[in-house]
Length: 67
Image 1 (tube, helix red, strand yellow):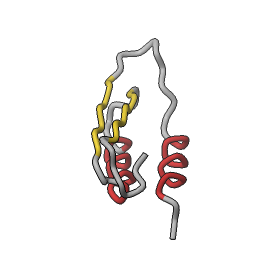
Image 2: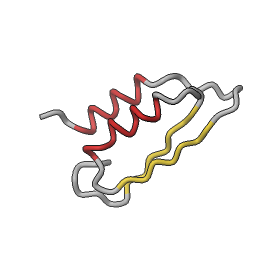
Image 3: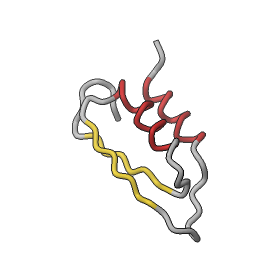
C-alpha cells in the first residue's frame, strides 16, 4: 500500500514553481479524514489554466493519516 503522506509530498514537489512577481491565487484546502482524496484534489488544482498559485492545506484533526 502506498503511504499517502509520501504520495502527497511527491505530488507537491512536482507542482509548478511559484513566482511572487506575478499575480497569484491562494487556494485554501480544508480537510478532515480526506487522505484518499488529496491526490485528486491537487490534480484538479494543477489542471487549472492559471499557473501562479499556492495551496494552503489545513487538517482538522483527522484520524485517517491525513497530516
